Image: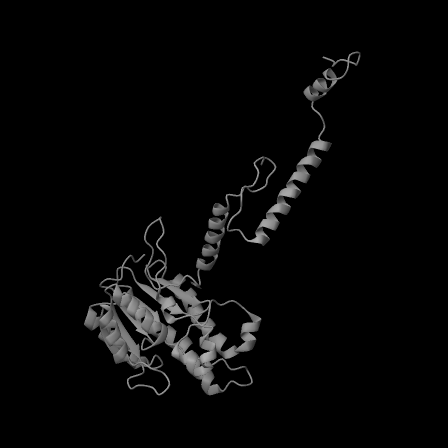
Length: 333
């Protein structure tokens, strides 16, 4: 668990703009060394930001930086970039695979050029950058690999909407699962980060227009650190309250929210031995209240039916006969 990014070295691909730049600035504010790796050197006519403007923003945020022009599809450039990072900062602690491409065409609309681009950048690039960084990460005190991808859930609708894009994302997700298990015993933490909503990056504005930007969240939400808990500090690897990893983070957070809502409601679960009445359930959804009310009604009905049909014990029969009027038969010894 990383408590602070001070003096840690991060290698972030695709960090010239958007989410990559937001993560780089957040790390720089904690005093980290950030290597900015991207293709853009000259300003793009549609997409703002270069590796030099990103490096300047990181330095203003308080971190040390190294701007590297690199294409994640080129193995030689990736190897040279990692060598320069280790030579400049003396090591590597965190690898963030942010470099990506967008093409959400349907199956009939997909061109093989776009298919190859997505798989070269998202699938092959993610694997190659992680593989190249791993020998140096294994020498670090607390190494991490972070990938921005969705979990490999076999969603038929998602696959139907954009098959080639989803396949590329799933390949990156498989890299997360395989590397996490393969290097678990060697101390390398491998996780993924997925936004639950669209993020308002320049690529979304260019592809979808201003109307789509109205439904997006800002890239800074992806670099927001998680809330500190009373149990102690948590990792400051950029994470969002509306994002999840491929491990059980989403399931654990959902369970935590349910437990928190139950505690806030101070409600007593119905049971055969429960005699207390439920207290006000503030903060609990109406659907849950209805479900609990039905459970309480069913439990009360079961208890009444059980009491009605339960055979009386010998002591209960004796007490019942003693309560009868005078002249009635007394209880036999």
